[in-house]
Image (cartoon, rainbow, N blue to C red; front, side, top):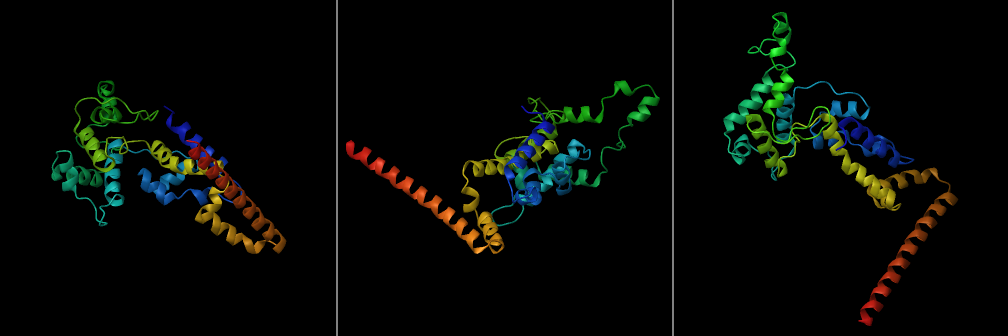
Length: 267
């Protein structure tokens, strides 16, 4: 599996090479849509697109924030949010357990500061006990046991038994995506890279078919917008070029259909 940061950089580099003249990255990358698809906040999406490192985020805070994000962006057919009742019931939990998790984490300061129930590592260090106590990251990794991407590589670890938050994550991902897929806990780089794949594949299809961009609504609008900048002779050349390509394609279709008919009659 590709490492998280090089994977994102490679995807962005490939997209940049496929955009072509006359368009900028902003023309093909919609920050709002990428944020909705990835669960990464818009400002962090912009940072990642600019090659910057995202701010540190506790993994449990990330999961809870994305649970809220899913409810706000993956709506019922009637446009309303899924209730905590139906989400929790889908994996055998209670509404209270899910809503309490979300509300407690949204009201609690970031775990980057020491928890009232847990002495800080600085305090333990003064007592000579810091090496005996696992860090918050280790504790989080012990709780998040199913389909959690590695913080270093984005690789999803094999499931380990136990962990109430792990079963919650798996249940919610199954509710929204059909199966556990690590979406709630994936690093921002991994999440954005996954969301960018549809953009990359679309650009690759355009590169393989020179007419694809022209057939698209955006391409036609762009061509129409540039038409006033062309002299009459230049505009006629563009029109003739398009007509020539379309005639060639029509001729190829006719030859292809004729070949198919002859093959059928031979049988």
